Length: 135
Length: 135
DNA sequence: CCTACATCCTCAAGGAGCTTGAGAAGCAAG
DNA sequence: CTTGCTTCTCAAGCTCCTTGAGGATGTAGG
Image 1 (tube, each protein chain N blue to C red):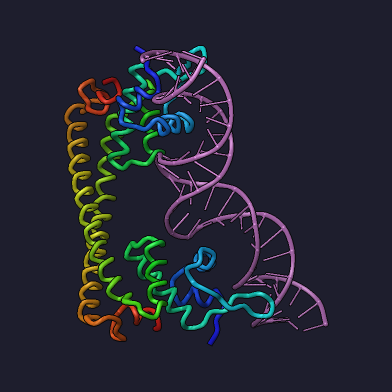
Image 2 (cartoon, rainbow over the protein chains, first blue to last red):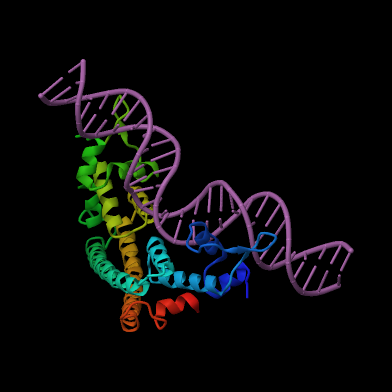
């Protein structure tokens, strides 16, 4: 029923060090200890870690996760709906990031093309990069 | 001809602190000083800063930028072609990142939808999130 | 029972790319 | 002269962990 940190790491996909870190910053609540001071994890802990891991995979920040986890432990919680709203908000962020990436790709493509054109034979004064240096 | 750091910041779009940081990590080479120890920037410095800034906007890492900047100062340099190759390599990275974002968005959309379905009236045991907690 | 070796513990620092702050000094304008 | 902006030098903080040192414990094999 109660596992060592290594086992918990296996079951959750978090590294041992990461689990300790999450505890340190207060994401896990109280974690039990054996007589000799080793951490012990039960199923609720595993579930919590898995949830955290999933939300991290979804690119939520630790503060957002902390808020959610806390919401889930308050009795009158509508945590589920909160999660949904956070997810929806997050989608907006992702879309704008993707737009940035698209712009980035276009710029880089241009850059590479102009380099190829101008610098076919090595360094050229026409090169956009070199221009950036001196302008 | 020679500007204060504040002016340089204005002209390059880097913050004052960032410019000092770039100097500290050796991206700028030698920066002049006035008699009382204030930094002075000439046009070549401005150009170099602008280039760095542009490459950062394009999401190049500082180490890559350092390599490029150094290449540009070596006499036999084909820096321009190097930049082009780096740009091309970078495009690949960007594409894979965008793919990740796409997957992320899909997951979040699913998540939000399942929340909406299951938790229309507040917390529900069916909710994927709540399941994550206890499973 | 003894010896490896794996796992655990607690600090502490590192990494990327800056930002922010403290505390002090200089410079220009009113 | 005073006010207020800019500059200076450290130094620490941010995010999210990872890596390492140094030491104690648990487990398996001989």
